[in-house]
Image 1: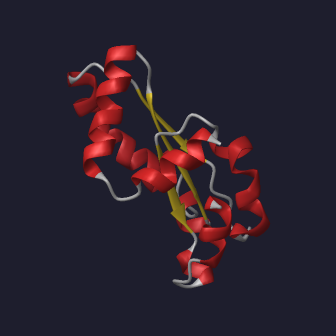
Image 2 (image 1 turned 135 degrees about the vertical axis):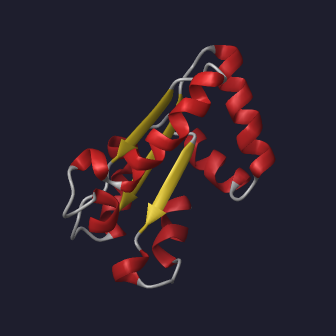
Length: 121
């Protein structure tokens, strides 16, 4: 899948993210950030629009507006649902057009990467 290839090939590359931003600008397409995780990402105890993905959007949106790129943020986190088997449904939850995917399951699953590795494979 194309979106998996993007994640594997460009993990940690600031240069590739910058190229992706420029590509979106020239094609007139939005830049999409998609978030998955537990209750922290969901924003439990706050309103949905106060969850950190949308706080990040509020911080970044003025910058994106100055460079004329629409920013779309999706918060598909679900509290209490482990990454497996949820991660195998990510195309349905996060979309297949995400430019950045945040994977935040460390609170309950520790720092191991077994599930993330399975998802990427």
